[in-house]
Each structure stands twice: as C-alpha cells, then as structure tokens.
Amino acid sequence: MFRKMVRMTKNKEKVFNEIMNSSVPLTAYEVSRALPGMSLTTVYRALDYLSKNGYIKSFSLGEFTYYYSAATHRHFFRCSKCGRLFPIEDCYMEDYEREISKRYGFEIEEHFILFSGLCQECREKLE
Image (cartoon, rainbow, N blue to C red; front, side, top):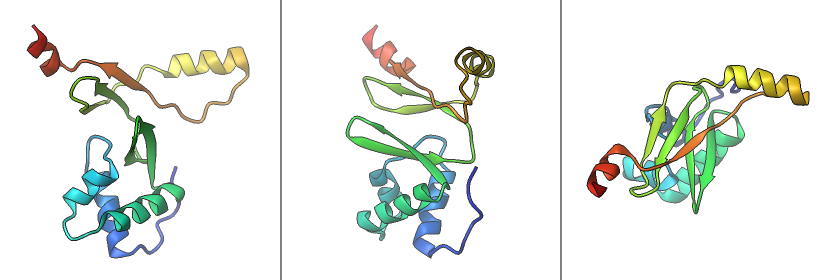
C-alpha cells in the first residue's frame, strides 16, 4: 500500500497527520488553513513528497486537487451545488471487479468512485 515510513521533516509529518485525521479529502489550501504558520508552498512540497512516496492519494476535480489517506479504501460524494465532499464507507464493487477481470482479462489493483449530485441539505433548500 504505502512505503515504509522514512524520517520525515516536522512539516511533512504535520501535513501527513492533517490528511490522515480528515474524513474527507482536502485541498492544499484547506491543509494550509489548518496549519497556521506553514506557507502554502511548504504544504504543496509536503503533499508532493507524500503523494510520490505512496503515503497519500489524490484526485483532481475541476481546478482543485484533493488529497486523502492511502491507507483507507473510500468512495466519496460531491455536492454539485455547495461543493462539499462526503465519505461513503460502503463498497459493493468486489463482485463487479471480479466480473470485469474475468470478462476483459484485467488485473484490477484498485478503484476510485466519486458520486456527484445534490446533498440532502441543498436538496431541502430547493424544496
């Protein structure tokens, strides 16, 4: 999953802990806001290191890149109105993965699912 932890700088550890303690993916700006005194440039460098070394994963959505723990298997829902991300802990993809592997001869290593739509709060505001 991820490589053996090597000695990290305090800044990298702080960024890593911020990502690990979040239930939803975070942007570099969100990490920077949560770590006062750390420049956005330092956050980007730490995120780049952590991502390249397999400690965290990322995905891009529009103009933003979101970072999340590589140690967990999660799916997410993004509200198309307010932009918030919600974790979805359930995964029903194992049977589908086996079928895809069998049918197409793929060896699937992982998958990532991002649902999009209106969250409950935004739906209620429309009613």
